[in-house]
Image 1 (cartoon, rainbow, N blue to C red):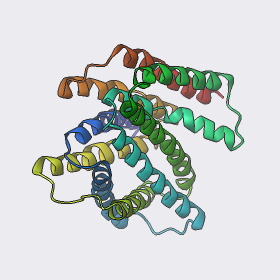
Image 2: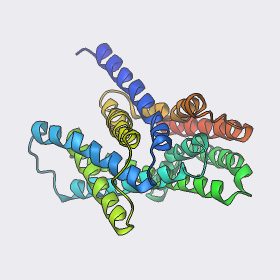
Image 3: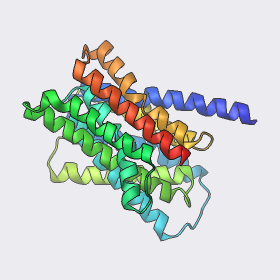
Image 4: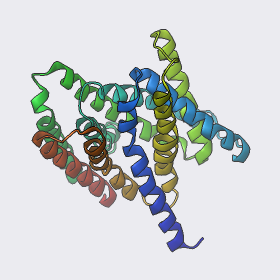
Length: 289
């Protein structure tokens, strides 16, 4: 495969991944189950789908203990990400939830700064812009404890995703793509099953539509969506993939408008525009640094 066709294929995969991830909030809204049950079946079914190919295709390697621990820890953060983000959709709109959870690149920069990598001036400006956007977006919910909780849960999902990305980068320096994805997703599923069983959450007995939503989350949003993002990194620069992530709030809000009749409010549009601008600024600044 030559360079042009390889990039074209990666761009197509990235586009499909964006659509797949953006459907996630719709599947969640249409599933008649508690957030942890939705999260556990999303990760369990997706883990099954990637583990068999990983066992058949991945060559035996001995990467050492550190990358394996990083992959397992990444799975734990991924479980936290889905538990908090899916829970947020019970309290706030799809637009608010998806916009806030996609501030993960900003929190990623903050974590890197704490680790000793000083961000560029443009990055700091982006963090401030994102904070202003989140404030505008969440202002109408300050007198609504439920919506405020949903927005905070979405932000918690963003922070956990930022940590996941850091550990994923560390683990994949030594682990192959399928090996890492299999370890991380299986670990996430285990953590979620523990939470479901300890919390005595109903995990079976759902209607047919809910099981179809679980399947959609696993295949469309996780394997095609999250898996596609990771695969496209093999060819496209990380900045390009990161920029594509910022398209999710736009696509998800469009789906919510068309399928769930959730018309974005003025605060969502204004705050969302600032959040997206902030993420783009951070990505560009980090790329040029």
